[in-house]
Image (cartoon, rainbow, N blue to C red; front, side, top):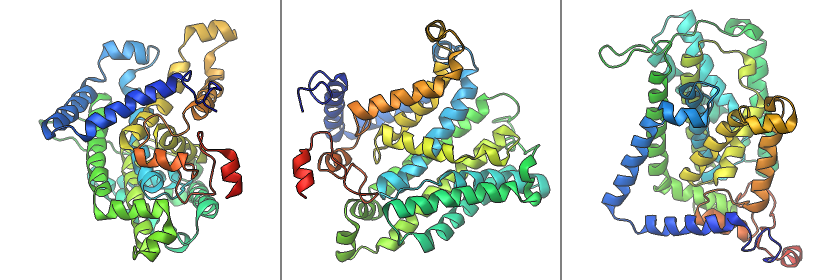
Length: 386
């Protein structure tokens, strides 16, 4: 296996993986001031990211700040939320877009029909998404693997179809004139310029990351890890698995609702087709591609998933090679990159050590999300004998 060019030393991604492992070792033994210096550098980088000099390369044919808001910023926020459910608790959710829709429609409906302040509607959207997560999870979280995935997929489609057929919330026409975030006098003026929305979504991402990291290092995070690795064993050891799985769904839903509220306030118009199933699949792909369970990996995966299709749209040599606008093939090319990535580095771009070990042990790095899957370095004959 190690001489076939896929998993051997000839694989450049393996060498990159070795560098990543070295950086991870340094991080684990880094002093507090070194870690805070890295955090500060990451925040500063995020603040200067909309600079025109960066945008000239990253998105030469589009407004770079707008692309940073949607899809990049929104995808990152959604991926961090889905990572709580998939990466930390090991629950396969194919209907995550439903919570994104809950947040967006709450901001749109209460803002246009009742004239509520934007910040109040955003809080309402987060609350409604959390309640939806509990309503979905309470009867379904006793299911596992593929069965849970099918139920969540159905829930996402139910929300979209219900919105499409409910005149009270605009039906197929959607809702227009969604209020912008309320201005903060002397601090920020939300209007048509994209910069304030970008910094708002950066603040939201930072807060959600802090919240997620604190959870992961707490008793709750340890319970989620136990459930992900072996739910039956966790239950035998006294972990109330149902309660913690329900909590994971509720917290993930809250983050999805927050992303929906921010998107609606910026977009001014939403309609049911804004929330298709393919968006759930795309965010799940971002989590798995980056490295489920590892926040830096999830953020990187979401960035790549959101940015690559936009960049393919503007590659001139692709236009010459294909003889037509590469935008017509960008999803195909993007899918090819994903397939190549999964073949060369199936554990993701930046996997956590624990999830990487799960994959190589034969669980596919997915905990209880499905049947065992042979890892890239696992002996197939050994797996067949199990």
